[in-house]
Length: 100
Length: 216
View: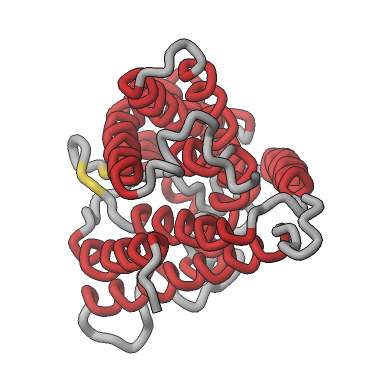
């Protein structure tokens, strides 16, 4: 199978998610920091409204945090790709009729 | 800039959610039966890249980090309506699978980081891009679009916090805009860098004369 441009772009994205993500800064982001400094960060504490399978981008049951992050990153990247591929498919015009 | 639940009151969440639902519905309508079949994977890859890049928090100043939004970048490459759908998919998955951003605040997060960045970022890029065909002008336009997209998101986020009664205007606005002015510079640099990579490998996508769009 001939390698297409989007194959390469998807691989780059997976590499970013798997290899760079464990190296990401763990400092609070702009909003979190402002919330801490201005004293309203505590309003977000408590149990989440909806529970998620992979909270904080960590695959559960893995002791190495770097590996847990990498696996979560790969799964998320593939899931986003699949969902948007399906969205694109649903919105695409048919090549046969070519009325779009 | 993902707002967790607890920061916004119900009215603000519902109002922001209503705007987001409306824009996403319009984006789907605008692209209905218009996406070229060979461009379907580009939607997926754009989202995959944004999701991966958003995991990479970079330090900015004083114990604060930021990450790419990517809305302006995707809008420049694939058009504003496709960018709305791409950003929405990323934010929905981040919310429900990774607990990044509150479920009640999802509409506000889509409005701040997806809709605004895609539509405003694209409008700025397209407006400046009309002034000149030079590629340097397009890179400048892209940088400004990316920076303003981040600032607009931070501004809207601040407004939602103020309207919710969470924090006072005079303290939250300078704090949010100050830190995001720096995060926005990195957003601009990454956006220009990504466009440079695309222009080398796929000049048909960028810098095409007509913004590539996913449609034909």
